[in-house]
Image (cartoon, rainbow, N blue to C red; front, side, top):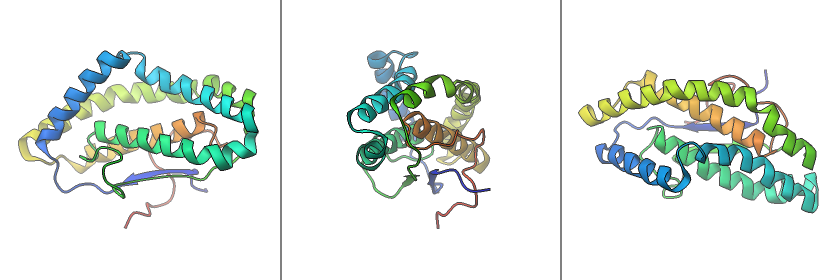
Length: 197
C-alpha cells in the first residue's frame, strides 16, 4: 500500500515544560473568546474548501496546485503546528522553530470549483469520526497535562495517540483544501515507517 500523500511527524520531546501547559490553557481561553468555542473548527472545515474554490476559479486547478498550493500548504503547516502544540506534542509554537514538525504534502489531482466545494459534504464521515476521537483526545490531554505538571514527561502511548489524532487532522485538512485527491484514510498512521531520524 502506497503512503498517503500527506505526512505529519515529529520527534517525541524528552521533556515538556510545565509553563507551556498553562500557556496553552490561556491561549485556548483567549481563542474561545475570539472565535467562539463551537465555531473555530467549523470555520476551518468550511473555509478551506471555499478558499480553494475561489482560488481555483481564478486560475484553474493546475495553477492552484502549483502556485496557490504552495501558499496553502504553508497555511496548513501553521495550522497543523498549532494543533500539535495544543495536543501537547511539542512545546514549540508554530513558526518559532524550524524542523520540530515535519508536514509534507505531495499535491495531486485536478481540482475544480465544484469538486472543492463538494469536499465539504464528502469529508463529513471523516470529520465525525475525528470529532468522536477528539473527545477521547481531550481526556488524554488532561491525563497528559497532569503527568507533565508532575514530572515534565508523559507516557509514550498517550503521546502517540495524540500524534495520531493530529495526523488524521492534517490529512483531512489537506483533502479539504483540495491539495490531494485521495480521501483521507481512517487511520492514525501515515503509511510505511516514519522517515524522521
